[in-house]
Length: 189
Image 1: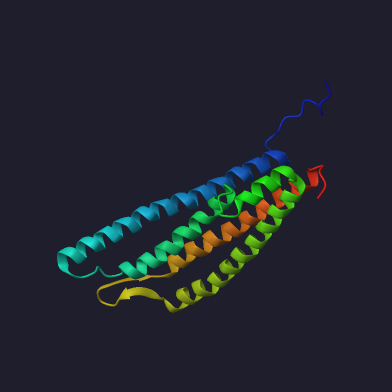
Image 2: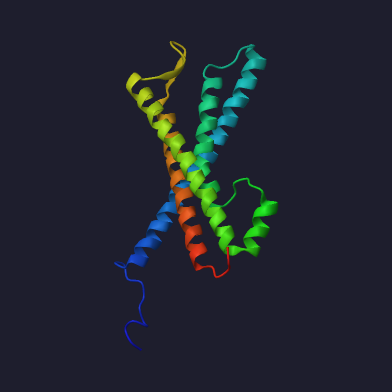
């Protein structure tokens, strides 16, 4: 057997690097989703504590509405990349799945178009989040009532920015994968 036929992936190979990069990327997006899931638990505890406080004390806890709003946006942004990666975004499945089965190449191109548009929209959201993050960082913005309870907003904005950036990249990765599938398919468009 020639050395070319007995080739295995050595640590320095491009294939090994791509495999490791893919694993690291999957760990990142799954890790962000896990953080988002943990924040769902935190949000549930905050809401339940507020309900108890309203019934027992007749008043709401400080920070609940502002913190709840920031947590909700943060949860969505942290879990978006995994939703894209797992192909769980809502779309017209009645048309899409049948079309993709009947016309694999055209279906892959349609999916690539969807993912390119998704990448552009989410990248736009991430870009606009940069300005908000910079403003919150520079001005030391906070939520809450001074003297009672306050929290700086920049950590929340940083995680929102991270989640949106990773989701935009994942849309791009999916678009490239769909374009590769379209070029390999033998059917007509």
